[in-house]
Image 1 (cartoon, helix red, strand yellow):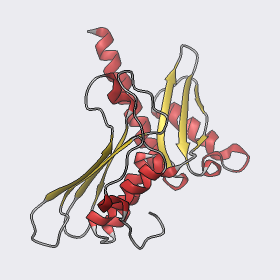
Image 2: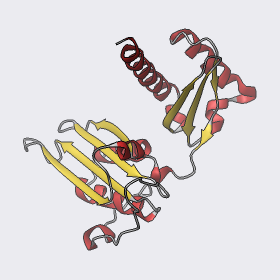
Image 3: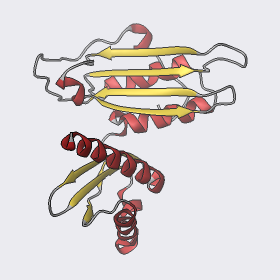
Length: 214
């Protein structure tokens, strides 16, 4: 039981660190955070689109962030190593955040989701699932759910840990919409099968929106 409690506490700390860094590094394009604890240090690696905003001039920003995390989460020796994201279209949190922004601007949800799914698969992803659930239509309409699923996405077992996932809520004027994005990155090796590229359905392959972001 003691080990289970420690595992749960570690998960809570990791979640709280992610939320803290999301608010602190929103302008840096934060996608995800990796945390490795050792007896000597706690290594924290934020993956961002703009590392310069995390480091700051002369390292001032990253030093202040390290000190804040040390006090807020009682970390004895935190070390932050910034990593730059190579392809934002393969990062679920960044994709979900852009979808949320576009939904709040009133862009057609179905076309938006299809376009995002197509562009993710074009980047070499082995699987993608995008779900939008909530007030997707005009005022007074019932809540509904839209989903696009392409390629291979395991739902159980160890393989689930190989799927990257993010969930973010949008708040357009008609009501909340929950957005979930799951991506299997290129080159992912599954223990039980070999996954190859798939041909996109015509409806997805032809999807597009008038937006510079997708």
